[in-house]
Length: 548
Figure 1 (cartoon, one colour):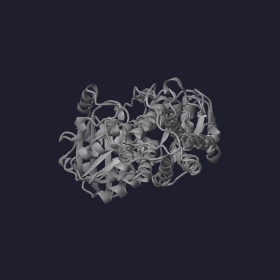
Figure 2 (cartoon, rainbow, N blue to C red; figure 1 turned 120 degrees about the horizontal axis):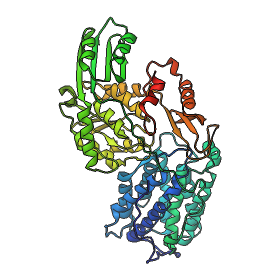
Figure 3 (cartoon, rainbow, N blue to C red; figure 1 turned 30 degrees about the horizontal axis):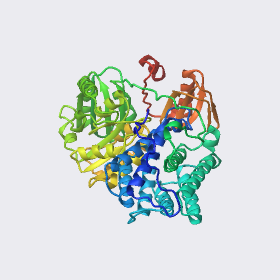
Figure 4 (cartoon, one colour; figure 1 turned 120 degrees about the vertical axis):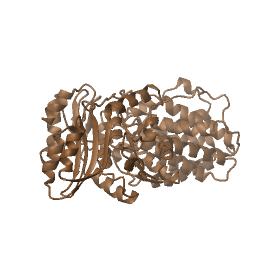
């Protein structure tokens, strides 16, 4: 994944850097734009600073795209007010924030703008005060701040800038000392986080911040950014390409959903019987209420069995072949790497019953891959935005989806830990009531959606969906793209690795052996339900090996 780079990277108008010199809004805009270009040019090297030996959220790309959104917000502004330009940069970064690193970066610019409030022109001392103010805002944005990350780097960078400014109010001196402080802080991050030390890398977010500030410094001093390559990165020279995963769910048939209400049955027997009538079954409940999602060629048989036990509610039967064709048409028509298909934004009567279509609460999951998008649609999601591990939607894209649905109460399912912070930012940007369920994996998102009750309130659904998501353990099998040591597990490039809830627990050279070991680590023998999703070079027969 490569961030788009603005064409202008040279400095035809060196900025004032001597003692007593000031930057106005246009000076600040050019300096930040140059830093953004420098960051984008080195995004792949930052992406490679990955603790896990697999492609993940692409920190460098996320930060570069966040900065490009910030610069775009002010690129046509004629204002000479430094405060106005800083405020515009802050808003653009907020709306364009991608991934956790991008969200924290947007909060850094928010704090920077607050520190420059009311100032038409800024000295090097003012610039340093802006960086120092950014620290508190960035720390507040993270529920549980962790040292050895971008937070440490902005704090120590701000401290270095303030110390330098107290000695000499000169951009030349202050920017030079600020960059030194940032670089030294990044170099120390492995001493603060064991996972960085074990992986042999520095913190990627901190490195991105250092590169951004270094670009500002280089541009202010009149350097040609075209001819230079960033120094100081530790780790592989380039990030591996993100794996393209396509998930299949067998024959299309009918996606059947309903709520069974009654009493007097044995839940385990009911679940086993219904599950035997199809595949991709997700069945939860107890001896009084059972919620069913199942793919079957014969929904009538499923419903006949259920009606003999009690009364049915919220019945929804969707023809997945029709859904598949609609999805392909929407995909062929374009709409960007991250999009909400037009067919998704207004659920049709064919896709779900009137109770679902008229629900006062909208459920908006993030999903990656055609198969998972189809699965979430079949389970009654109001609308879907495509994104995931290496394709994080921005705050603005999530906000547009929230605003596109008619409901005033909205539940967001990020389904990836690197999307949670961007999703939470939408809450303060809309008049709608938005709840973000802490789903860090796709299976957690599916469990949350199964627990959704179309007739319940936002508060009731929030409790039920969060509880359902918290009960799900997620295991993943993939291939390492480089050597690494994570959580005491040594990995060689090319090895098969197994992760439980995003934690590396096992590795080996044989796929099936690693898969069985992973299931054992997850306590699969004691689990009530195991759902298997497959893609890439795996076939349905491969998946059935573990099901049967």
